[in-house]
Image (cartoon, rainbow, N blue to C red; front, side, top):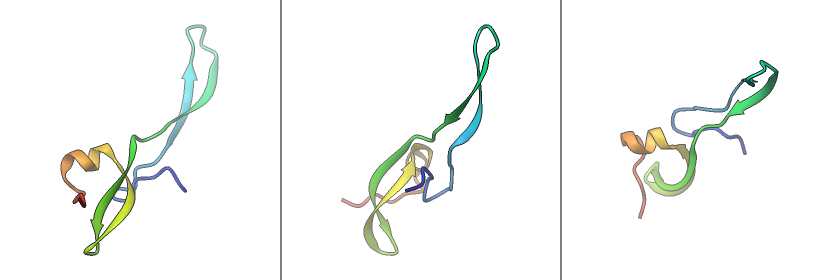
Length: 63
């Protein structure tokens, strides 16, 4: 399963980690994804969403 938000599509970003001595190695920044039970098309479903979508109210949680 991809590390991607199912609401906004936010995914991992790649870049370089730079040490104090300026040695550069590759690294990834992963989004903060949570598995939540949400209402999708009128039915409860488990989806992976980022915390930004949860906080902004783009996801309707199922109980």
